[in-house]
Image 1 (cartoon, helix red, strand yellow):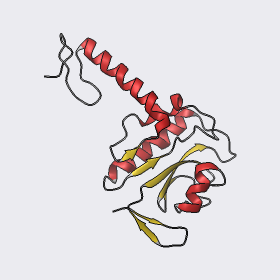
Image 2 (tube, rainbow, N blue to C red; image 1 turned 90 degrees about the vertical axis):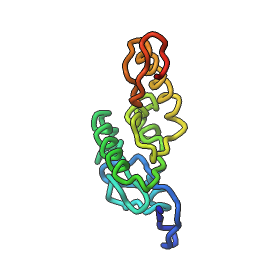
Image 3 (cartoon, helix red, strand yellow; image 1 turned 45 degrees about the vertical axis):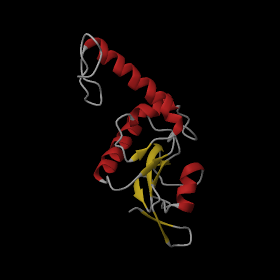
Length: 161
């Protein structure tokens, strides 16, 4: 069971871990980061990782500059590893990087393509991820390879065995 600290200091059972875009300085002063600080235990001054019933993924640096996508991708990979290591918990992902950091879902969503099932992806990412999976499935069907989910597809018919 997941427990979260309420603003009053008590525990609320069943709430998912709130995953938000942060900055390396941990200045949770706007947007989802502020909400996480006010409602889910994000700690001012801590910009990365689990804090209370929240998890910060940096999309901005110490001076509030947007991080390069390769750095964000590194932090996303760390989060995915964390989520896989905690299958008993649910994680509610916000569209990180698509607000104050100025990135688009097309730039950020693919980083979460192979997130584990306990990560609830934001609606803003779903059209992008659906297109990617459809393209990969079409490619797998045409060349007779395995799909990303590991399902083998017949070469001639495109059907599963």
